[in-house]
Image (cartoon, rainbow, N blue to C red; front, top):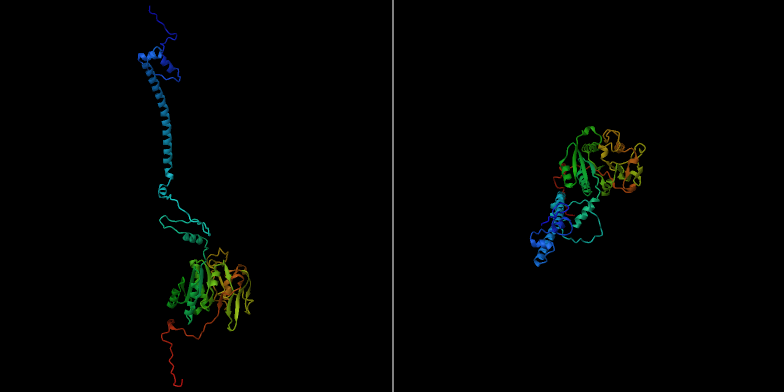
Length: 406
């Protein structure tokens, strides 16, 4: 009789190889449907063919596990590659590709340092410009240390007389040797003569040729109104610099003009001149302790009346006093001009009183006022005849008749 046995659980028992897979161990499951394989797992057969099938099954299970490991590593490396690729693409807008393409990665051997080691700062070299040598770089560095010079504004009144061409040419040659910037303002009465204009053009000095249109019948001192014309021009155009009244018949040293550039507000110095008798020289100007004015040189009997004992060519001042009174705390709004209504010899002191209050606002130059830098000689000869057009039409050769006894 056939007997039927049932399991206690009521379920059909699984094969041995499927139970191994279900237990979750380290053993590998192989699906085998052939009878020989069933005998192999049941331990009933040990033939070579059955052993070979069992080895193949284990090999296929190992390959399936290795594929899982390989797929995980491949995914990790792919994510890493794509991360770096996205990072590089994200940083592209902040990279100057053209600059990298033009960059020269060659190695350059630098020369040894010289004794004068100066650091050149803020030097911009265009890309298309040729290479700049060491000498040019050194010149750029030295130019940075140069302090700009103050402009000198030289005012010269002139008029028609026999030695006018001589005086203008002499003064023009002196100004030609003065370091720029310099502006020469020459003022004539009534009209600008072509002879004066030609002399100014030939000097090579930057100049402005002005005309004073004041009626000569109503004036006492021609030079006062000519200087006032120049002052109006400086004030109207707001020319910035040091103003100096240089008459064309005076004699000047180059050191005087260079010393003027150090003036802050008002500078003065002694002037040597001939007395009216022309038999002795006198000195007029400040007495200084360093650059401080402490007194005055004078030989005049009216020294108690005159406030400042200075010649017209013995002082210079900052032009901003004329057109920027707030800078110098000037409360008087009237324009600064020379006066024609005062006595002769008082034009200087009345004009200076409009520029400064006292000697504390003055600067003596050179240091200690120890040297004479210009001379006022009064050598004009009134008996000479002014030639027409400044040219002599005929030769001055004189024919003498020689006697036989000579």
